[in-house]
Amino acid sequence: TISKTITLANGVEMPRLGYGVFRMKEHDVAYQGVIEALNAGYRAIDTAAIYENEEAVGKAIKDSGVPREELFITTKVWNADQGFDNTLRAFETSLKKLGLDYVDLYLTHWPKPTLADTYKAIERLYEEKLIRVPGVSNHHEHHLKEVFEVANVKPMVNQIECHPSLSQNALREFCSANNIAVTAWAPLGTGIVFTHPVIKKLVEKYNKSAAQIVLRWHLDIGNIAIPKSVTPERIKENLNVFDFALTNEEVATITALNTFHRTGSDPDNFNF
Ligand code: NAD
Image 1 (tube, rainbow, N blue to C red):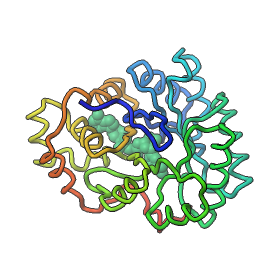
Image 2 (image 1 turned 180 degrees about the vertical axis):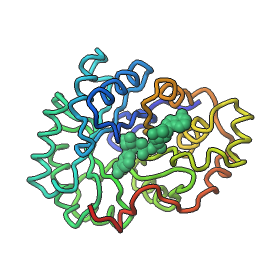
Image 3 (image 1 turned 135 degrees about the horizontal axis):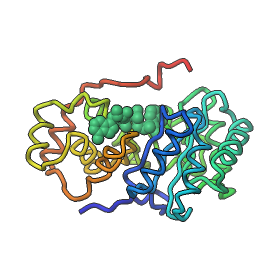
Image 4 (image 1 turned 90 degrees about the vertical axis):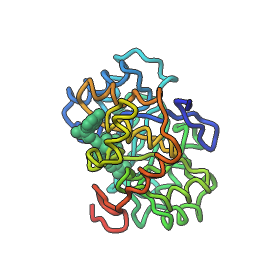
């Protein structure tokens, strides 16, 4: 068995499976999705300023009646708002839109030349107890090293694209050695491996869906995963992965499906 939460570097417990809300700009869609997710038992929500749904997420949180201390809310500072002062301002805006008085995890969304100043602001928010955990997203090893140079407190989470077609072995190892938990975005990898014989065999063996096999692989390699869906059945399905486990050999077989295929941008080569 595996615990439903992971203990971060400062002792804070973060749910291993969260609900991602990217591409859910429409207020009602985001609101309904978060309500479904919380009813299904999710306790972590992953949003970002650029997703333009922090207000809907905040309203759903409030209306759900789930006690704030049971929730783990992540949001991110957008690229255009990087830098020390701008990040502090962006955080205040996010907090207001979410209708919260603190955020659990705050991330630099993408690394830019201003990533060190941006991280210092996140560290300040941590010192002021406005966030419970400082983190980053889309940071390669060299970006993390840049952060380490200025950080009093190292980031405790790095949210990166990770799925069987991009298993991120080297970066996951580096993060683990530095006590940084890895959250996988696009954990399902747009379903590229769903029909692969390796996955199909496990679908039959465990009587689980391909999505569940892939999400279980994330848990078994130590990742946090934040799958997105707006379909109530799938929202439930994606959380129902704690009642079975893959063998070490099966985990290794899935990890070996890696083809270095990205569904999104390479953090070293993006222009937004
Ligand atoms: P994902 O891997 O979660 O895939 C989502 C898509 O998979 C859905 O749109 C749906 O079509 C399909 N799907 C979901 N459940 C399924 C199931 N059970 N069976 C079959 N298909 C299913 O990819 P994502 O939405 O890109 O990423 C998840 C979350 O990660 C986002 O919502 C966001 O919160 C976060 N994210 C972060 C970054 C970043 O830069 N930090 C970038 C992208 C996404």
